[in-house]
Length: 101
Image: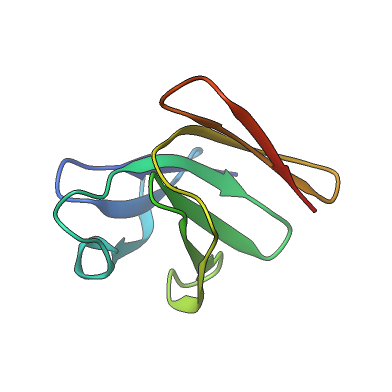
């Protein structure tokens, strides 16, 4: 029952849909380099996963917003990223589709 938002300073905010109150706020800006941009935020069963255009994945705890894990995928210049079953699909700036298991 929450909405996940990204503000202009790269803070992830979760808000309760029913009463509009904020659950938590997490500043992910300190993990990003100046040229990095967030291209997608996906909610999984236990985490909120933040993907950047250079392949950085930040795994935030859904309950408190704390960063639990950081992974660097072999991805550069991504425009879009998706999860499907056990696969990560990403599209580059040159419109090439890459699939990782």
